[in-house]
Length: 300
Image 1: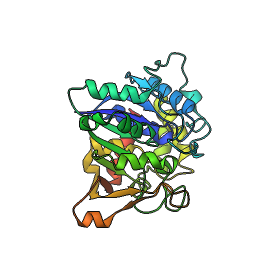
Image 2: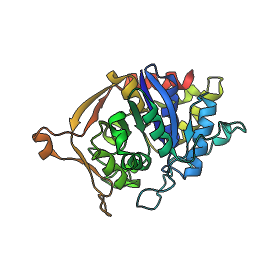
Image 3: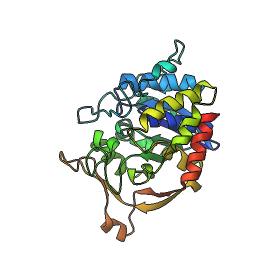
Image 4: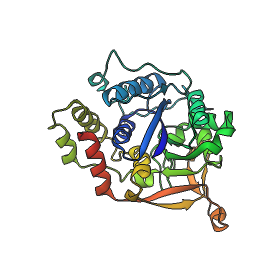
């Protein structure tokens, strides 16, 4: 069993990642951590609480960083104003679980240090919280098994021609994480844009008479009219069902300039030729297995 903390910025595909996490066979979720990204921190935190209530997930939850390390916040429109495609009202509740902490970096540190086993972090938003954790508590590195990241690309971007959203939002944080020495799995746009379900599968969700499936239908129907990839579940599935993907060792660098290359992730082939790698990059996906896992999670 892999002990995990999920750090995310829900976000429709973040919600999908949590659906998959709930159904996972080999993952033990220890905590949830919000971060600014797709929408403001207030929205991502409330979405986290409401999703946990919907999915009957009872773990510590904490609020993360409101702004990137250096940059001004930059939000995504594809998730709607509330992050849930305008449908958060479907899962709002007066009795959501209260936050355990107002500082997710401290919460993660305490969990990591108190654990007898190594912890895996799944980070599918901007890497602000994770960079601060590694910089503030460098002793935690030895107790982190790996960080499974949705972000970056080894092909093209979706904010600029070269830069993926999560790394574009906080390139300095991504640079810190990739230079940390911690083992990393990277699910970049080169693979996550292929991670989708069919229109027929989306419509099927609307025929299932349970609240979770109806909600999944609404948010995915809106989201997939703007973005073909359900990106974030890849970083969960690669841990729980690694046979869905193929990976390749690479040395990835992050650009922190202020132009078209801001947040760009790219291979350093010189280092690779000398046998140096800092992450495993997902390069292939079994789309039918991916779709089955998602649909099982959405229809349970």
